[in-house]
Amino acid sequence: MRDHTGKSQQFFESPLYGVQSGPPEEVYNHPLTDWVASFLGDTNLIPCSIVERNGDEAVVDLGGLGLARVRDRGADGENYAVSIRPEHLKFSTQAAGNGCAATLVSSTNLGATARHRLRAGGHELQLRELSSDRAAGFLPDEELWVGWDADKAQLLVLES
Image (tube, rainbow, N blue to C red; front, side, top):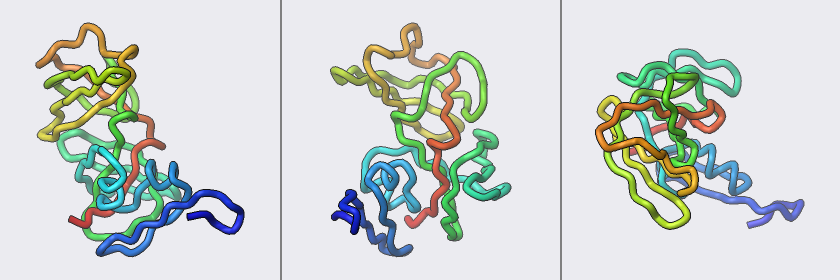
């Protein structure tokens, strides 16, 4: 669908929370509900509670993973989660900014990309990166840090 200016727009109607529309990249990276996030591709959904809201940012408690600063588009509901796409998680050897301690479970080379499964505070996370960026030297069961940029983590409403 295109808007009146000819720009591409996506339009989604979720079963419980109505409509989300916008440019494809915006809807993909900043879904308002878990239904939209999951419909458009793989995502890491981490249940959370809101500590503070300030404009287009929020501070959330990710349970056993600690506090994080995330993007907030003002979605209102009873239960919340943070959505982080696998390509927006990054390996690190030290704690810095948003992130959490994780254990590498497995890595799979998918040609141009590599997919990594991680355990963090009772959650299973996915991290996807270019194979050339692959986390050389990390072994299964190794403890490491996984981080993300605040603008790549979206506060959303849990519908399911």
